[in-house]
Image (tube, rainbow, N blue to C red):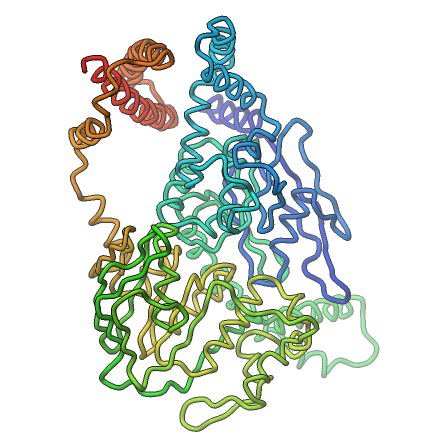
Length: 634
């Protein structure tokens, strides 16, 4: 027994690999201290989330770890032999390069080999050059790598590789950054809000990818399902102190609640003791013994504990909503296209009072355009939009607040008036309102352009709500908001008596807030689904996905004129047969290993993951072999 325990401890220490050590770092801007004396480590195969309120320096910490910024004090020690990649909020690319050129411009030894091979494919008659490229692909095990990198680009909807960077949208640039990072497979990946600018399908793929891959992650994200399913450790910065939780988001919430309750109990105990010691202090004579001096020192320590308070102010959202009439919004046979891109094709809907609708769909299917049509910011090609006389929109757009140079936070709110009307005839000053949105008096006189991304979003949310809307439209409201603000916003929206439409890729948020969905399928098709996002995923996953259907679709795609295989396809067909046989044998070996009585739980887990990868790969290669064999037969 002793040997077993000793050996387990030895193995754990021996294979413990530290990638990054953060030692007592501090950072200030002017007289504002973001954080001080923070220390933690990142180890191999950890998937760590960093959680903190907006404005406490999350992005600054990521920049320091990535080497893009330096701490005022302390240091970051990085293991010399590791490669670190950083997905930040602001990526810089060469605008003159195409997507493909951007990917191949990275320092990856396999990518040039793939490029050489693809160039050889353009001239298959040059068999000597082709054979060299083919052999190099074999020697470098680049076949799987090529499949993986093309899969990454496909999943992130970067299919037009000849498109220049300067023609990409902000969202496409973010996805290109993510693609480069995933393709290069660094030892440590640092992520700042990785799910922003991804649609739900992409997020679920990325989530699944990070879950399966043996990869080391350090990330900041507001996506709570992502935290739940990907992370195995959470580090929280709370009131200047770091707290570490070895588990996912649910575990973190549970343990944080326990910690706060314990802190409250300790504070109450200290308060009672403080009253007793205070009475003793008042009764003590001026001349004191060594023993009493020791008790006096303890008194000041007890006093500090007794007066320790959590400054957990929460955003207070309160609006004087105008009453909605019986007619809300009626949509009659709406048609809208942008060139060949069809957004709406005869869509009809009559909104009822108090409806809470979420909008989902792939990027480019017209979700934001639909919101602009509702609010008369975008003309329609056909049909009619009838808005009730009592409807007052509150529209939170993706663009966010318009930052005016030199404008202070308080000045933004004062544009709506020195006093703001609330419910029951009450009024508060602009300064008081900002305090309810967690902007203290000092912060109110900061320049808007100096606020963090999350703070700017919180200020923008304030400007939308103080206009007292009864029909709220929120386009990606969760981007850059911290988890604390998100929880408060959710509580407010659950009590909001008006109508609500939300476009969001935050599945946790959607599940909590909406009752039904508009599903934008593309090509002008919009479906009304009665349920939240999890209900929708369950429904979609329950649909039969028979392999026969896939084969039939592939048969339809094969053109009758393609009666011969190309030079490359013949080589592919031959290699597929060998690869399928190899995978079948490997699958059998793994399945047989499960019968071994001495196999450990860890080995079962690893082999199960490996088996799943093999099954997926085998399925794909068999389908490709079937497609090529059918071309031969034709």
